[in-house]
Image 1 (tube, rainbow, N blue to C red):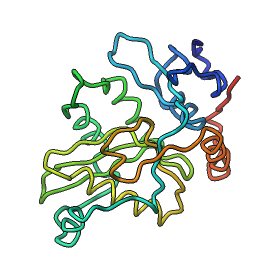
Image 2: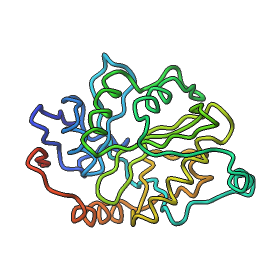
Image 3: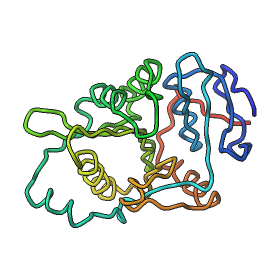
Amino acid sequence: MLLVEDDYIFPHPDCVNRYGILAVGGVLDKKSLFTAYLYGIFPWYNYEHEPIIWWNPVPRFVIFPENVKVAKSMKVYFNQNRFRVTFDQCFESVIRSCEMAPRKGQEGTWINEDIIYSYTELFYAGFASSVEVWDGDSLVGGLYGVKIGKIFFGESMFSLVPNASKFGFIKLASRLAEEGFFVIDCQQPNDYLKSLGGEFITGDLWKNMLFRNRKYILQNDIWLPQNR
């Protein structure tokens, strides 16, 4: 298990342990997040006083936008225009709602103030995105993630009423497919995402997608992604 230094240089993505952990430590800001996601690496840890844990699990659990599954029960919601969906209108409200959402089998949440601040900064830099689901003027569901090139890295979602986040996710997948995105990274498997079409892909296929994605990313002197 290798320590990430403050110079934003990560270990090689293949240097993961059997649990999918690549490194521990380092800093959490918009530059480190951009560098990490460029290589399929993401932070996930429980408490603010814990060191940052950086993950790169393989095989990878993903959803192909054009293959998202829409259950018959969900089609009723779309036929009735049950909810209204917007994009990138209330990023911080969405991430804070995800922070407050109860998680089955979990105590508390991994979304802390450092996470909220860093991902919000990434949003204002143009590399994170939110989906808002509305019932009238009330925000009842949504999700957020990182958007780099033609890959969307899903982070978290919430629902205050049944199926609100699922409605938003399906709308997002449709929009991503229209824009030529070739995959949604789900990071970790669960039954909810499996019901939407989640599947495992091999590490080699995942690395190929990350490599293909590089040509869609505008290079900027602010971002100097490197790996050992």
